[in-house]
Length: 277
Length: 268
Image (cartoon, each protein chain N blue to C red):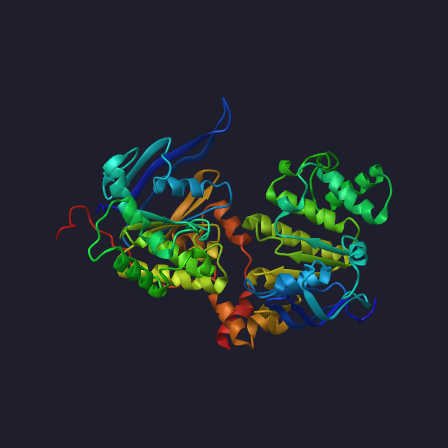
């Protein structure tokens, strides 16, 4: 184990022919740590994560540095990035249904994710799939591998996606709004699962979300983004108890609280028959 | 003392046919009421029946069984003039502002559409009413010739609200009306809804899956699960002293910022 960060992003700038979308963003993730990227739509948080994975559209011009385990990622070929993605670096997206192929069983798809990087027989791949599904607590994994995506609930599908992300035991997990489409009780389970997985595998995590309460729970450190720029960076405690930036403060103030309420206009309770008086 | 609510629903049931001999009961007998200038929040997870309930309250679909009363009049299964009158009194704001606004209509056409459907003659003309309505929701009335795609999400939702208000309804049903919005925009739209309630004595039925949002807008809350209301009460009762196990588990699942961090920030 080294003290060097596993992922280091330095002065990342992403520009499209028409506009710059990310401007000089820097952050790092230590071994086993979680960086939360939080911001509203258009803040550049998803573009940043796509850049780390090498999934930006061709017309995007990227400058800066992204080093992963001391290897520079910017400027790598698609082929080199493909070898990395799904293997040492895995992704979990918002919508599991559109990330899964409806025509194949989930077991086949998890097995493919494994075999694409590690090879081996279909049977061996399927065995890995069962193990991975067990690890994300899908009951009866040995039977469920043969089911199709539509036979799973939204929360279960996201577990399948997490199983697929974990099958090659990645060093870095990139989760882009992984619980946004889920019901709140399911969200709580998935967040708990991600924390457990990270604990047991020691993987680092880049967690992208618009939800401040979620990011406060999952992150060690947080980067608040707006219009492609970093407005503030710090530990979760710093950001939430002593925000130094006005925008962060506004964002926190705008977030509705479950344990506090604003005043409402008084309802008019008209007794029957007195409406004309 | 008996009080007459603006809208009253009694034992609403709604079945959907799912096959030649199978029926799915999405809503299994729910009762609630809304007073003038009052907001009823309906919360629940996906599949709880909250949207079906909202659609019955808006008379977008009819209940299989049950009674719906508006302003003391039974409106269940009513059509024709009674339905037109109801549409003048009850309007709906939907979740996705872009898909619920005709992209090929100017904002003026969008907002004045309900007036047209109801064949209303408007004092001072449609154009003036549209501009007033835009001003009321915080939109620049000079933009009435623009198309929905030229507005941001928050502005587009304001167009949806302006359209609902143009017939001067007494009740507006908001089905996940702020769910797609960024948190700072969401806060502004919630502010607007509260201001409109105060100024126009509006009532709302506010459907949402986000419990913290519901606490900021609803006087009382109904918690739905599997087609039933498991608990109903004032927002203080539901959020501070939930009695039903399901409500408790729902509230416990909502992610929250560490209260000590929150306190430190408020103090600093």
